[in-house]
Image 1 (tube, rainbow, N blue to C red):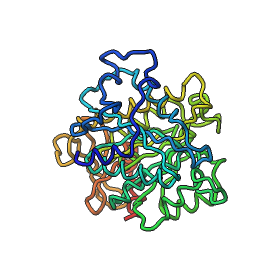
Image 2: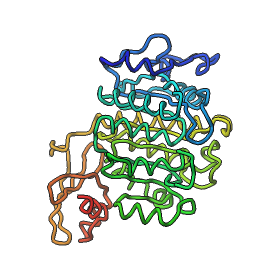
Image 3: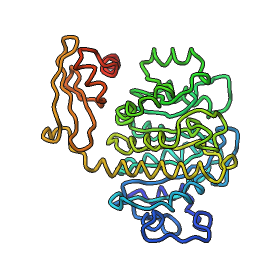
Length: 378
């Protein structure tokens, strides 16, 4: 990677005394098998996934933390066992906080963009949810049109507040030039969202999924996330019982739900960055939220390992083919023999991610909503 030294200028190395303490990792734990930036910057040439911390919390009015959130996550992540040594991972430390919040954004988006340009997938440990702007900014810098997904109890479009963490979506979704082709919002909680916001999102043909819908049919989120270039998660999406650091609500996703979502993200061959934000160490209990995030990352890597077994959609021998017609439209559905995932063909012959539910609807002469929404956007 030719720009490693340039990236290094924006980074603070890991302090193993904070992450490891008096413990030691054995040779099967993640901490022993990943490349960690402590003294020497790691060679990223053969690395697939890169972990990056961002500690800035000024977007929520909390100022700059001392890096406790990423450190606590790493402490619990690197204790876990490595079942997938074929997936090569490096941790390059934290972004140095800038003189202003915008300076932090600028440094983060440059580093993330350079990593994506080099063919890496980036796992970002926040920091507050407005840092999604830096994550998205990396794609703007690359002039890449993207599909984005956020998992959050709130839809952060509140223009009556000065806190970036509560209104950053306005800048992301309406800023010019804009590179958002489509946006999905997963697990919002209705009582936190002004009804007019949902009407606006629908007019823009963006898709919003209420938390109850997500929990009732979690597998329907797999095609949504599979189509995404980046996913941003706010831990506010989780119920307090499963993530004690989230004091926002007793309701929301549970631990298994969130691990399933991050595994879906790992299975996406479009996705090049995953951001996990909103972890407040001071509110945590027994580091349970840090442990939760560590396990979410473990499942993301598990998904990335499984993705390696998936066949190219051009390799039709690796797929079951189903021809069906609905509303006088002939449609081809494909199901992977290796992962069980589904795709459906649009009238322009392009294949999009779908689910078994879409196939069942089509086979009963009903138009799948996913098909309709894709047609509306085209």
